[in-house]
Image 1 (cartoon, rainbow, N blue to C red):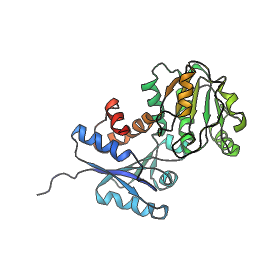
Image 2 (cartoon, one colour):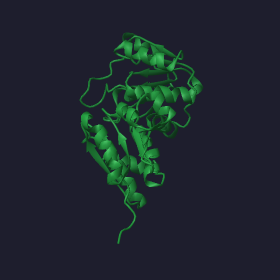
Image 3 (spheres, rainbow, N blue to C red):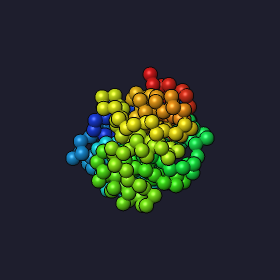
Image 4 (cartoon, rainbow, N blue to C red):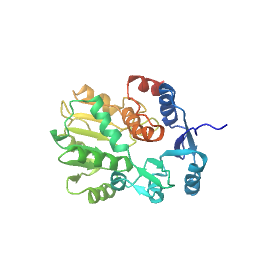
Length: 277
């Protein structure tokens, strides 16, 4: 006697032990009473392709991919969404029944949905945005802000050439600002986003002067450990609307979960509480 296969999914990275994704997906599976498992997999870059191509044969319906595999996932996929192509990286893979690998990037979706849920009055058209950082997360944020209708984006990174590379990729709405002048770009910005790891536990603080922040501006930090960074704390004291980074982690997981397990999970206070324990 053999019943239907139990769908398997997981997250591939190196390192991966710190990931909250297994807790997130596991909680949703239990809460919704769905069959399935979601497991962390620590895979070295040289083994990534072999592991990826073996997983469907072991019953996996898809995986999340994180550092350092997001760019490799794009190269190995057979079908790539437009947004993953624009960002140049994938974080969500679906193993199709015909054997092909479908690659998507839901980071930008997660970023925007986090703002819409936790700052419902946010208006992308209200004015320019200021984005700190020019790594992979910044690419997703830039793409989603432009798609949402932000008229102009000031971009600053400690290494200017990386910011200029993004300007080349995303077009004339991106204005590069030297890192030493990053504080100045906050003065005219209705939306401010930190995509760097500065301010995270174990990292240096974000030293950008914040006195130019406008009262009522939306300020968000992709860092969620600690949940309230210095940027968010001081922005709140200055009368800004603040949104922490945990919601982005949760929202970006929704599309993959729905494709793999067949039901759309709800993002609510309960799931936040589970991840904050």
